[in-house]
Length: 279
Image 1 (cartoon, rainbow, N blue to C red):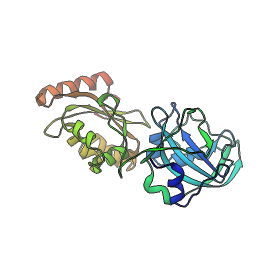
Image 2: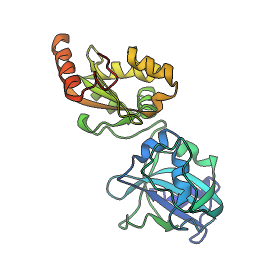
Image 3: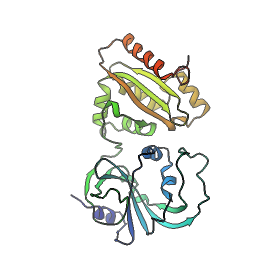
Image 4: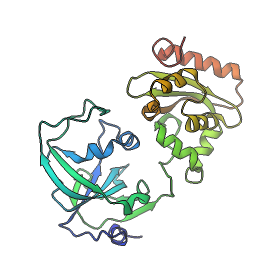
């Protein structure tokens, strides 16, 4: 199996133990994948509570299960400013996240952009050491172009709009997603993560949930009046929408039975009175 240093060297970044740090970002308090999808991850990364990027380069990863980590990007460290009074930008999506006092100027290296989200390494036993001086790491997998993540089971689905669009547009890289979502009907939930407002919908027909979610990936609103209105008020609103499955059901169920489950969840979640379903 190829080693990480071989990959970095082939892309013009020959790492040394005192020039390059490996960074494994993992924070259970915040959805880092959402920050990546909405373009806020770079801001998240450049502020730190301690001066940990004391190096010439960093290679940034997102933590995954066990001791694995998936490549995000590589950066040149251009400088650092100690500024404890500095605040997040006005559009920052995580107001409960405190900024650090050290702000870094990081230049992303485009030679690695085509590998972002695709290269998985074994971080090793010490996952608590989230920043490390470069040391040999084994590449355990390279995902196909456009890959988001493996199918986690219906109950564990939690996708940003950008991730949903990638999954729909790259069927070869997401065969299991397409098979699983295409063989069941179901009740799904779209949540606006900025306001907490929710939309409950049902999916049926030959392609089940997959067919219904394709329309959201293409149009953003899927033909729903309330979602159209939300996009008319803010054309970028879909960047903050999150998709999940409330209930997977056999495709043999009738439309009336599915609509009954849909109505039940609308009542449970109050999505008519306080959400995006309307009255």
